[in-house]
Image (tube, rainbow, N blue to C red; front, side):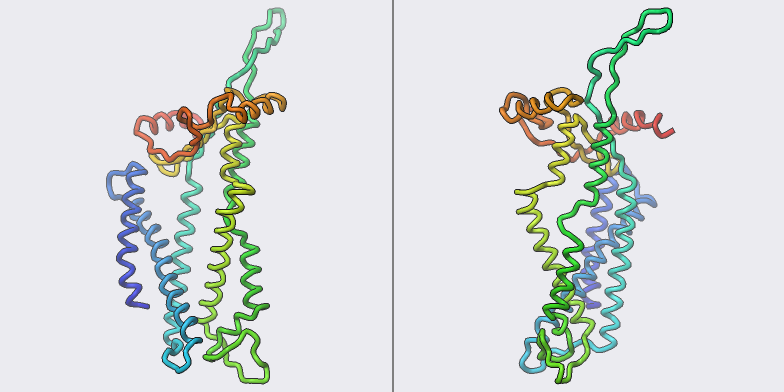
Length: 328
């Protein structure tokens, strides 16, 4: 495992350097400075942790698969010293992934999110003053649509294509109820329902890791396939529902992950307004259903509403000028 870790560390560090270069271009940094080194360390931590996990799990799964199937003893389980190295690799992978998780949280907390309300004032209101005639003023635009979209944005932050509770319950069911944990002993021949009258050796840490990880990955893969190809296609897609909500609320969203890079959700209503009553909203949806209005996409005759964007310098400077009074 040590040799494999040394060999695979080279492409992992090269890929981390490539990701750092892409981040520098998106962040508008031309020189290699301290933030660039910190980003490289963060990217390298995530990649090296994945690399260590693949090495450890690959070796453990190999032993689980072939140690139990051999008719004559050709493969032995790791010695206590080798198990200690195995534990060191797992601890290193956990620490590096923890550092990568901190980097992910910091990156999410520093993202700029800008909501654009396309709604225009409709109608005027005359408020008479004392001793003078009233001066007509435009009706203010309600802020509640933007608040509602922002609240939905916060809710989908925890959306995922798996259920952690279902995942843990399934793993425990197969380990404890089905009895797959009984296959993790040092015995070459073992069963899910061992005979308690016979001698049963203790469990192997390596085999237990391989069994638990395999179950977790298999169940997680089935969940991802189910949510991706069945649930989101035929039942509910939270991200697409959020994009539809933006179109109904007449609100677009700028999500700037870096200084010059981000994402755009085009939510401008094809009807020109969204602050209306239920009847008009139903009529708007009916017009869309009958193709009596334009499509929701940013470009003419298109339905594409989500984009990646690379901001030019002038646009970023204009964005900073707009936010400057709000930051003070």
